[in-house]
Figure 1: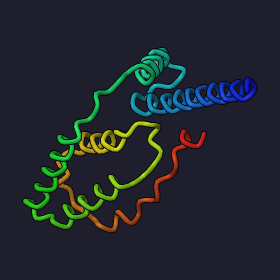
Figure 2: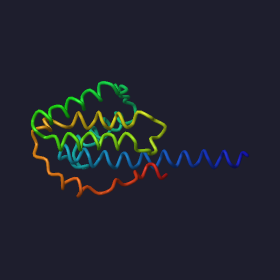
Figure 3: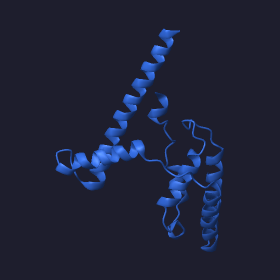
Length: 150
């Protein structure tokens, strides 16, 4: 029994180390991409430590499911107003399919709401953009996150 618990503790420890290493690597790439700094620049280490601290200790407010739903309803209404019913219908179908997906959420049932909220926040005047339905066919199948496989 002690052997099993020791193996589990070691596996958990290795998972945390691997995950932290991957997060640090990706944060370096993000910093370089956003700032143009390289790891040889004086401010790169400061930016890296700031990012890692925020990734490790920052907590986000829980999403308000009702507000997210109302926001998406508002976007779809704008699509209809701007005579983009096809886009509104596709959006409604896509959101419905997404909400019915089952996937590993690291024991966080609100992850879908977080993702929908993020999409709302990064979209800006999406009702004014030209919609190409063939674009959706070119999107590859989502890959399984490597963190979920460890």
